[in-house]
Image (cartoon, rainbow, N blue to C red; front, side, top):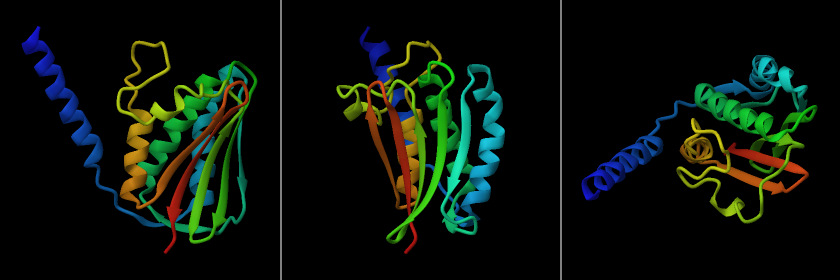
Length: 173
């Protein structure tokens, strides 16, 4: 038992180190265009549950330095989480805003929300509220690390029974 637990602990540390050591390569990106592509690619996973997905864009020409590949991966993960949290016929919005010295991309859903007792732990590696066996609880941890590499932040607000808002905050200066 001790050898097995040492092995699992070692694997966990390796995985955590890998998640933290992701290298981002930011480049000037039209954020509105990126979000529109993500929405188009997400429609097939939304459609079977009757979930609508769309964008709200403050400025269609807004450019930000970001790693489009990694940020797309994070947003796709957040969209999958939102689709899973929506019972049926809900709505997901990708909202682009510009705040003081920051570009903010928010993923807003009207799903079941996150219990207040779980909220402090959702970015911890391997923490999950999902019951599926193929979920490892690494999506938000990965997103947090990607945003940290961008010198940005990932913020989560949620209310049980009302939905969740995840904000990706990219500094502009």
